[in-house]
Structures are given as structure tokens and as C-alpha cells.
Amino acid sequence: MMDRRAFIGRLTLGALAAPRTATAQSARKIYRIGLLGIQPTSDMVGPLPHSPQWNALLRGLRELGYVYGEHFVTEPRGSEGKPERVPSLAAELARLQVDVIVAAGTTLPALKQATSTIPVVMAAGADPVEQGFVQSLGHPGGNFTGLSWQETATMVKRLELLKELVPGAAPVAVFRDTPPGRSSQAVEAAALERGWKLLFFEIRDAGEIEGTFRAVTRAGAAAVLVTGGAVLAPQARRVAKLAGRNRLPAIYNIRGYVDAGGLMSYAANTNEIWRRAAVFVDKILKGAKPGDLPIEQPTKFELVINLRAAKTLGLTIPPSMLLRADEVIQ
Image (cartoon, rainbow, N blue to C red):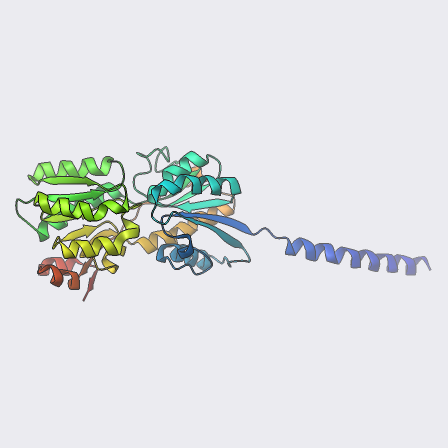
């Protein structure tokens, strides 16, 4: 009789334990990943966001075995091309106490101000050491890690490519929508060494773009070097169209301008960088400290040329440059 009671007791305990086990399994943590960008938030939402960069990030997470809605969800915040909105959006993500934040470029300073504890993965920081996000590339030391864009080296290369395409004494206009830093100093030094004249134009608001092109034309510039991102990148199609209308050959710091009708770009593969950022997110979610994860730098850079834009401008691209191009859009 005692054996029977013990057996029934064990059955009862087993039956009671089963729901607890099921509850524990169903209560597995779903990570929240904050996304801070310059696009409209609507382009960043869901498991297949419209933005190619954010889509590449989530593709990278899928390749690592993460399932949206089962292992993680995103908290997207986009400034819609309005830099003044970025600080409040960064503060909002910090208040949400997300597990990690992914951001890039001009949105990073706001995150530096907003949090010193939430891990931040840079999907391309222009110069993270100079900007004070990390102590060094090998030992970041704080809550930032990720990938560097190597903007200083690539900006000089863009100028060289532009002058190869448009030689002569006429100045090159440089558009920037961020404060001048080491990359601006490097391109100025390169121009001075080669005897090339540069004209810098600061663009702080999208409403200034058309007026800036008029000023460039009045100044007699022969070509345009486009840098920055917070103001200009969301206006890629408009910038490319105005460059064509004003018959100004332009080289851009991201491929998106060329896809929007611009002449050419020279940069690291943006989508590959964002896909690679998923590796940093994975390591952090598994317990790694961002300060212990060395900053990665891209090793491959792509020259993309749009022959349709060249035809509109009346330009003939030298065969030697076409041979060096990684992609030629016919």
C-alpha cells in the first residue's frame, strides 16, 4: 500500500513539475536589439526591412541561427534625415534598456551621450578612435565596438579618382554635412601636395542642397566630392539628380548614390559591413563585453561606375578606370 501511495505521489509530483518545465522553456528570453538610423523608421521595421543596410544586418543574424520573433525583436528608430532628431531617439533607446544597439556614422555621437552601459555595435564608424568612441582599435575599452569605415583613406582615394576623370586646374567642390575631422585634413593635405584646389561647402539642412549646387556652379568648380551622411545620404536621389542637371561629375562615399543615378562611388561594401555587424551582436548577446571585441576594418573597397550618368554628363570614362571598376552599371 505504501508503495502504491509513493508511486501515486511520484506521478502527482511529475504532473506538477511538467507545466513548470514547459513554462521555463516558453519563458526563454527574447532579445531586444535597438536600431538607430537616419532613414524613416518605416524602412527599418520587421524581419525584412526595406532598407538594404538593415536588411543585411538581419540577414547576418539569420545566418547565425537567429529567428526574428523567436530569439529577438528590433526596436527601430529613424530620424528621417533630420539630424536634430537623433539625440532624442538615442535617449529613447537608452531608456528602453535594449540588450544592444546597432548604429552607424553620424548617429553614433548621440549614443555616446545617451548611454555608457548599453553595448553599441558600430556598423561603420568613420574614425572611432578620433571621435572618442573607443580607446583603440585593438582594445575598445568601453561600450562601443564594431567596424570602422576607414573614411580618411577612402576620401583621399575618391579625390584621386575624381581628378583622374576630370583633370585640369578647376577646383573640386567638397560637400560635407558633419564637422571637419581627420578625413577633411587628409584630403586637404593630399590636394595641397598635388596642387589641386578644393572648395568646401557645409550643408546642415536638406533645404540648402539646391542652393549649394548653385554656389558650386558660380564658383566654377568642375566636379564634386560628396562626404558625410546624416543630411545628404537620405537625399541621395535628389543630390544625384542635381549633379546631373548642373553637369557636375561627382563621386560619392556610399554606393546608394550610384543606385539612385549618381556617377560613381568608392567605398567598402556597405551591405557586407552591416552583415558582418551581426557577428558582433551575436557575441554580445552570448556574453562578450564590447570593450573586449577589437574593431574590424574592411579590407576590400569597391569602385562602382554608372555609365548612364556618364552619358548624361557627356563624359567618357577612361578604359583603364572601367577595368578597375568592381561594377559598371550600363
